[in-house]
Image (cartoon, rainbow, N blue to C red; front, side, top):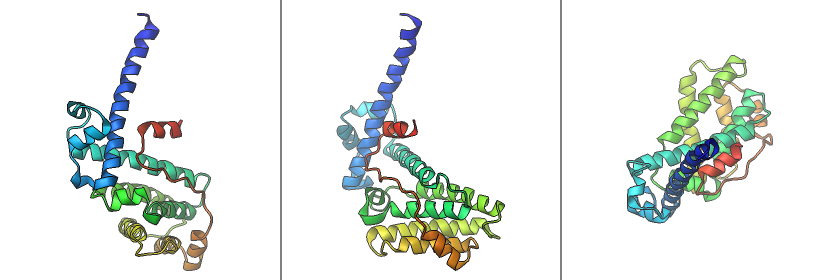
Length: 227
């Protein structure tokens, strides 16, 4: 075996393992949408993925660790989409507005993303924490550039996170109309010191959109998008 063949073999092995892991990640997405997290077992997951029960434990030590990995995958797509809709924007207020509206829009019309987050009993903490992390980065940038005014940015961030999740859920379940997305975005901007009329104008601008990704999401699709 020459050096080229020796290098290729581990790569093929790694790729094969990644494909098996990807099967498990896609399987739990399908089952969670069908039944909810509490109604599925590891055996259900391996049957859906068409792998042996023992294979599951080569990659995950519990159903909870698999759902955590799945949440991380969905969040990777989420951040990739936010990067796309904010690309080219320089005004921190517009960046915040585009990010908020994309986040809220993911729950419109009973989308799969909305169902996965709000109806499947999947822990929502990971999504909330990621919103906080990205929100804090954008808020601090706006403060540093003098665009936002916030004496207590951490408190505003908590309000923003809870507000966004509540509005997204209400839009998903139909308690609020789609028009609430633009209005809610403007309200959040006013919390950051943007005048009401200016906030409405910023929220009503047309920002880039990305095509919604249907579940189940694959690790390999994400790699392709990032290539």
